[in-house]
Image 1 (cartoon, protein in one colour):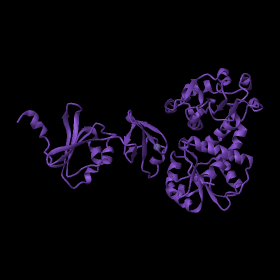
Image 2 (tube, rainbow over the protein chains, first blue to last red):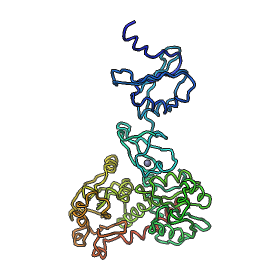
Image 3 (cartoon, rainbow over the protein chains, first blue to last red):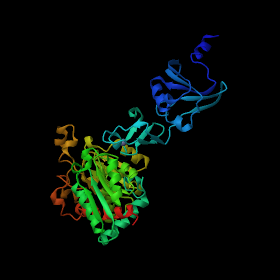
Length: 154
Length: 302
Ligand SMILES: [Zn+2]
């Protein structure tokens, strides 16, 4: 077995489920929580700080017996835009899915305005994506716009 | 959002604005009508604003409705820790309409989502004050006969002035040409310049308050330059008298020019301007009651 093949085997093969690849390492645990993975009962393998040519360090999630709806995947588009999902059935990749930033983000990001109602009452945050290319969000409550680099997650 | 709520100028279409202007004109002609007979309007002022509250309460009274409410959060249950949600839910059970002012931004949108009755935003922090914008738009329409293709010059605090920001959004449907005059520290924020770029609106920015700009304007919208807005007080001392309008600056202006100001003023319009037929700020304030009558009736689908 070549060195490259051994490297790929850092994580055990999956029979049925989803492999989420190209997660920025620093966002890995955020992705876990946004997808509600800690509530799953099926086996989950978490790869953290793995070498990646493209990203330097990356994270991988292998989730047995779980297939995500596009809506669920889109929740992570904000923090892991280049993420790739391999849908595995019977050890084969049968489909690839990508995260797409939704038009509205519910309860994911925090509003940066300390005087915003969402930071002062138990209100679920709601943002409209006003600029898809550069990722700008507008709070639907206080109407403040937040640029990508200033977005803070809940 | 509860249908009929009036939360933000950004929610208003061109047709909404023109409909509200038509209704406002009807109330100006005949302000006393009893269309609210048997109805109760709640004015919930979590932050005191006597001017706005009296204007709304006058509007309700002229329409024959009754008013309940409070004028200062210190006297209400919110000072005992009750959430806005609970207060709005409770009042929504008593009243047919909620008119709310709150110190937090987005409070009106949130209230409109939880109340079972329409909510009118009477100001939410630094965000929106849409009834002020409607009376501004009405005043412009009334004095110019149209809202289309006007040159609107805005002077003073363009950074924090929410009436400025909302007026830009409200006018954006009518192909305006804007002139902005402000010191660097109080320049119009980037987000509004971007908004105008996205909507293809023409605008120019100046730091000097010159007659050249006044002479090509249809509307001159003055605002207060407040000391507390400056991080550098030297800077304030330098500019505090620069953005002041004197009557001799109006000699070359257009006949149809009208001067607006959201009031109260400090020193940005000299008293000698008051006698000019181009001074419109007192009439503008009077239009506030008619505009609010129109907003209330519109919210209640009357
Ligand atoms: Zn906000």
